[in-house]
Length: 269
Image 1 (tube, one colour):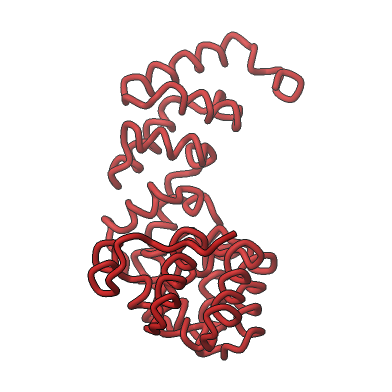
Image 2 (cartoon, one colour; image 1 turned 30 degrees about the vertical axis):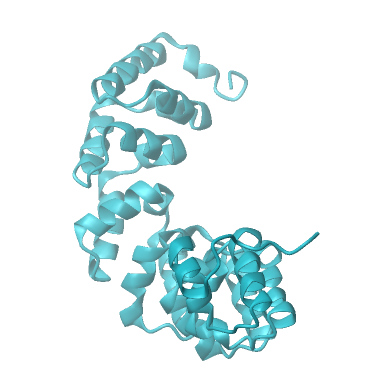
C-alpha cells in the first residue's frame, strides 16, 4: 500500500485518518468494517470529513446505519467518494421504475455496489437486456426487488450465456422470460454448478419434460443433493408422481404427512 500510496504517511492524512476513525466510532460502525474499507480503497484516507458526513447522512436516510453501514462501506467503499448528486441520481432512477424508498433502502443494504454504478453504462443496459429477452417493463420492479444482484452480473459472461443455455435445452425465449419474472434469482445461477446438473437430473433421472420448470422455476433454487434427489427417491420408491411444486414446495413435515415418509430416503452410493 505504501508503494502505491506514499502520501498516506503525510501528517495531514494521518490526522484525517484519526478523524475518520473517531467519526465512524461515533456512528457505531464496527472497526473491522472501517479497516476493511480503507485497506481495499486507501483513497478514503484523503476524503474530507465534511463530505464523508454528507454521504453517511444520505445512507442513513435509507436506513443504513451502525452495522449495516459497516457492511456497506466494507463491500463498496467507493460509495463514500461519490458526489451526493450521483447517489441521488441512482435513487431517482429506481423511483422512476416504481420502487419506494423502503425497497430502495433494502437494495442498498443488500447490494450497495449498484449505487456506485453508471446508470447509462450499467443499470439501463441490464434492464434493456431483460426487456430484450421478453420481460415486460411492468415486471421489472418485482425482478429488482427479488434479485437486485443481477445488476452486477456481466451480460456477456453471465446473463446471456445462462439464458441461452436454457433455450438450448428446449425452452423458448418467452418461457425463459416467464421463468425470470416468476423467479428472478434464476439470473444468478451458474450453468455448470446449478443449471446443467439440475436440468440433467430432471430430464434423465426424473424423466420429466424441461417445460415443467416453466411452471416452477424455483426448482433451480433447491439443493440437488439435500432436497431434490432425496425427495425424488422417496416418491420413486413408492411409485408416485407429482409436480415439482408438490415435491419441493413443502417443508419436511408437510412432505412426510402427504407422502407418508418420516425419514428421507437417500439413494445408495
